[in-house]
Structure formats: C-alpha cells, structure tokens
Amino acid sequence: MSWGTDLWDQFENLDKHTQWGIDFLERYAKFVKERLEIEQVYAKQLRSLVKKYCPKRSKEDEPRFTSCLSFYSILNELNDYAGQREVVAEEMGHKVYGELMRYSQDLKAERKHHLQEGRKTQQYLDQCWKHMDNSKKKFERECREAEKSQMIYDRLDNDINATKSEVEKAKSQLYLRQHMAEESKNEYAAQLQNFNAEQWKHFNVAIPQIFKNLQDMDERRTVKLGETYRSFAEVERRVIPIVSKCLEGMVTAAKNVDERRDSGIVVESFKSGFEPPVDFPFEDFSQNIQRTGSDSTIGTPKTEGGKPDPKHAISRTKNKLWLFGKKPKAPTLEDLSHLPPEQRRKKLQQRIDELNKELQKEMDQRDALNKMKDVYEKNPQMGDPGSLQPKISETICNMEKLRSEIHKNESWLAEVEGKHGSRGERRPSADVNHHTPHGRESPEGSYTDDHSQEHRSPPQPDPHEFDDEFDDDDPLPVIGHCKALYSFDGSNEGTLVMNENEVLYVIEEDKGDGWTRVRKNSGVEGYVPTSYVEITLEKNSKGAVTYI
Image (cartoon, rainbow, N blue to C red; front, side, top):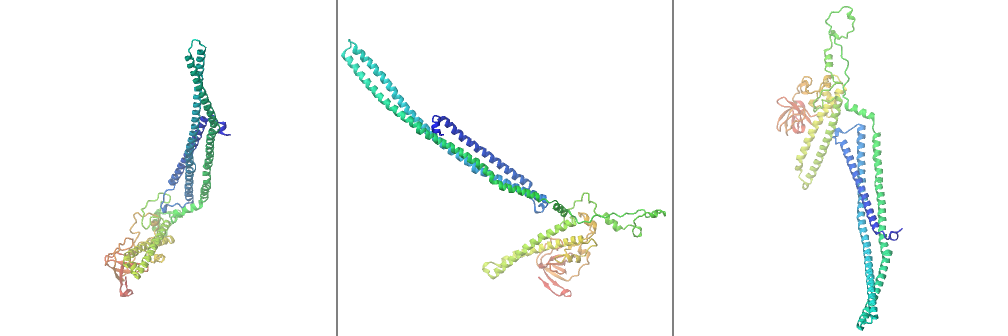
C-alpha cells in the first residue's frame, strides 16, 4: 500500500498524521525523561539512606558483632545497587531520551521540507488551472462578440436603407471578431492541453513521490520507536547481573550472622575478670550474753577466740556491692585503673602495640637518617651531614619518650597480669620486673591486691591503700652522680624533670632499657634517659665508669 496512489487526494490529512506522529514520539521521549528522573531520585534516596545508617566511625567504634557486620555489608551492597540505578538513568538519558530528541528534530525538518514541496507543486498546478480558465473565459467572450458582430452585419446587409459604407464597416468588424475568436480558441486549446499535462504529472508523479517520502519518514519514525522501546528494556537487562550479585551479597551477609560468635564477643567485651562475691560470714553479736546449757547447742559459726575475723569482715564489706545495681561512674585515668582487670589488660595491650608501632617507625627514620648522614660524610658534595643532626636528635628524643611510655604501660600491664594470676599479698617490685619485657617496672607500677580496690572505682583513692614504690622500699644508696647534658621535661609518670648541667645522684644503673634512676638534692627520685646524662659511678660501687 502506497500513500502516493491510495491517498493522492489526502494531503491535509497526511499533514495532520505526520504531525501527530512527531508529537507522539516527543511524548514518549518525555515519558523516558520522567522515568530516568525517578531512577535518579531513587538512587539518590538510596545513597542518603545508606549514608544515614552507616555513619563515619572511629577505629574503636568499628562493629565486631556478626549481625552488625552483616548489616553494614548489606548497606554496601545497597549502595552498589543504587549505583546501578544511576547507570540505568544515565543510559536512558543518553541512549533513549537524547536519541529521541535528536531524531525528533530531524523528523521535523524533513517533514517541513516534504510539505513545502507538496505545497509548491499544488501552487504550480493552481496557476496552470488559472491560466487555462482565463483563456477559456476569453475564448467564450470573443465568441459572443463575434456572434454579435455577425448579427449586426446580417441586419445591415438585409436592410435596403443601409448605406454601402455601413455594410462594409460591419463586415470588417465581423472579420475582426471572428479572427480574435479564432486566436482565443487556439490559446484556450493550448492552455487546456498544458493544464491537463501538468495535472497528470501532479497526481501521477509529483504528489506520489512526495507522499512516498512522507510515508518513508513515518515508517522510519515507527521503526525508531520500536528500537528505543527495545533500548529501554536493554538498559534494565544489562544491570540485572550486577543487581543479582548485590542481592546475592545481601543473602551471603545474612548467612554470615553467627549468634554464637556474637555471644562470645559480648563476653570478651564486658568480662571484668573479677571473682564472684563469696557468702557473707555470720557475725554473732550475742557472744557476751550468758547462755543456758541448752542454748549452747545452737550451731553458730565462731572464729578463734569467739570473735569474728575483723579482717575478713572488712574485706567483705569493702567488696563491690553494685553487681546488679548502678555502677558508680569513675573518671578516665591514664593507667586505666578505672576499668575492670580484664578490660584494663586488653586496653593496655592495645596501647602497647600501638606505641611499639610508633617506636618502630621512629627507629626506621633514625636508621634512614644515619644512612643519609654516612652518605653525606663520604660524599660532601651531596649535602651537609650536620644539617641532619637536629632531625636525628629529635628522632632519638621521640624514641626515648615512646620507650618511656611503653615501659610505663608494660608496668601497668604486668601489674594487671600479676593481680589476675595471683590474688594473694602485694607483690614487690622485683617480682614485677621478672614479668616485664624491658626488665623494670615504672615507679607507678606498684599496687595492692586488696579486693576492695579491685571492685571499686577510684575517683578518690585512700592514700594509705596505695603507697608509691619509692616510699615502700628503703631509700637506695647513692652509687654515683651524673650531669644533665640536655633538659628533660619528665612529663610521663615515674620520670624526673631535670635541667641542662644539673647534677643528680645515681641510685640505680641502666638495666638495658635506656633509663637511669636518679635522686635530686631535695630527695625526689625518678627515671631519666641514660643518653641525656653523663654518669660517673663511685669507686666503691662498680668502679669509676663514665657514660655519655
């Protein structure tokens, strides 16, 4: 079926139909645009949802429970799913909506061209018809004039009263009108023949070709719509494998939830290390009441001498009483003594590991600087070795500070492990030194094993319950003296502040950990970095030895 032959007289209707086709194409393009906007909003809302329920957390707040880890895995998969919705929106915008809008503009231009060609052809045919019609009217008019001249001539020729001149004049007029009528007839015949030829050409050649072009244009528009329908579906189909992987990831995360492991994490997180409270002893306040013989059979627990053990009673009353009540709030202390033993041990071990990592970095930096200094000394043109000395000194100072921190925390850790392993009398410093990796406990490492101190928070500790190591032991004898080469701030617990060129008494040598125990004239004792002092030992101790 062809528009050119079957619809040769439907120019106006074809004009309306092609306009409707372009409007429909643009309407579908608008539908695609609104669809991709929905996808964009959906993806944006999904990402906002993920961000809302997966806030930024510090390293200590990272979840460890399998249920939490699985939930955050689901959030990650959902975030990837949102990314696929964004891909769908982008592909729809580029391959469907954008293509439709460009094609719509091309269709409008092509339709306009074909319709202009059709109107030009129609206008030319109208002009041919007007020329033919004018020549026809002129021929009709000339024929009437010739008939009128014929009647006048016949009347004068039959009139005996008419003069010869009048007859001749009428005859000449008749010949003139007949000649003009003949010319009009010939012109009319020519115009009619031309119009018929143009009309045949118009309806058999020009209009069919124009309508065929319009038909081809409309069919291409229909094909384009079908292709975009397919592209619309293909965009969704291409993301299905990735979306399926996201959903499979969510299912895998759900399978990874382990209630046993979560229960174990709860135990690990909140285990205090305390022993459960024992039974309270019976305290008999009727010891001084005289009893009859029959009363003496009452089974009352007694201690030696008929009196309760005051130490035992006091230790029980001082035991923690907030097992199922509200725990008193304790301030955060540097030695983490406000924490239960098990939690304190874990926190101290974690802190020591972090300090060791920092110390290793400083040591690596020191080694690198020393190597660079050696290269500069061998090749002075590469740099000044002295320019590296301040940085090396700073690195050594940082290393000493880190060693001090590690030593202090290891002392606290040894204290906790000592309490956890043995709940007897207070252990002396030498006992702790046996368990300390660096060979000596910080001065603040002394402690008491009183159960009341373990189970209570220490906002205001009793000064008589905790005695410093320096106070418990007898004052150590002076084994030498030292001179401070550098100033030391002594900001860490157990260390001593000293000024440059200050002279101090040596009471304990460096045991290999880089610290020397000294005493000021005021009697204050503490540890200072061995590399910061020049030490001279007394002859009666270990010989006159000088350390720098």
